[in-house]
Image (cartoon, rainbow, N blue to C red; front, side, top):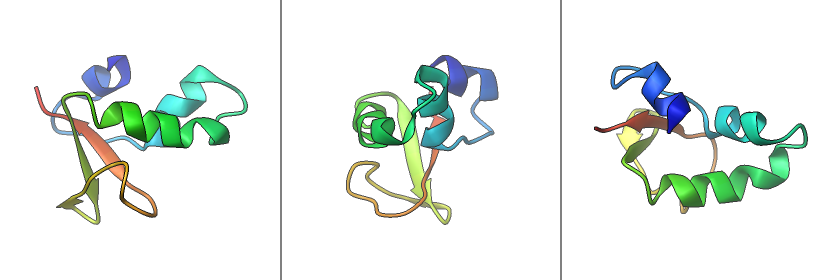
Length: 66
């Protein structure tokens, strides 16, 4: 959430940015980051359209909603 808050409600970020803050070997964390994002006040989008961060395949962006 710190990353989302630092970007603000007008900016998005890739889930990999959050994973990279957690570990050097961040790729294995991607499913967990998406799963946690689904429980937080974050909007997930793909090509500008809302998506479920867990079910979406391919790159997504996250954005704070509060």
